[in-house]
Image (cartoon, rainbow, N blue to C red; front, side, top):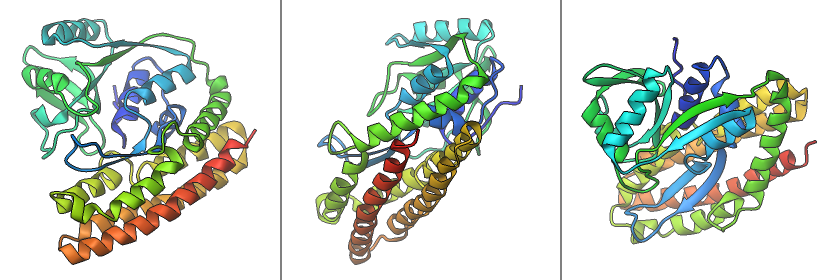
Length: 323
């Protein structure tokens, strides 16, 4: 099997699970059907640094996309590492590709300097000592020890789960239904973005993040480290560049072809331009470490965020009214 190593971990994982069932879809299409794009600003007292999220909550992309495609999804969680491994081995022996949620920090091939417990990969095989997994672009197919995988799956932290795994069940997938599924996913994504349940999310979160950012240099213990992490999470952390906006633009282009609706392609162009603004934010945050320069960068980023909030609201508003 020619496994897929895409840009984002959750959409790549589902792409390989579907491919194993004979359903070959592009990563942008899976990302879009999963209602993947969003915005979140979060900074609790327990967090050493603020978090900016550009995508839907963990696990929801796989759930949304499988529902849109008419493919049954099974999820399993357990605090027992032994049970988690038994279930994984049984699924692999049955010829399944299993999606796993974990902290890659613990895997043998990883060189991550930070913990992140909401990473996804596809497990496709095993030997007596190792598992074979499919990662995102740059890593591809890898091998890791059973002990390392068990530790990674059981890791705790923000957005973690208890050895969560995903398997696919029966399928009613019909390629002829993709056009309608795209329309429904776009409408639902726009509604979520324009009508967030809290002010930290959707278009409202931009203003909150911009206001908070102006005080980060004074409020954070290690602002340089926080800025560096945010830059990574925007541009390099499996986002496809531009904070997932490029992936969403590619999806809108594919949706335009499937539906015959050229207006989707027009909004795709808008999101490509928005993507460049997110890349600029990443560069501003990454390039400075001196206090005075960091304060200037924080102010510049805050201004860009305020403008982006309105621009993304306008783009989603256009999608919300399309038939």
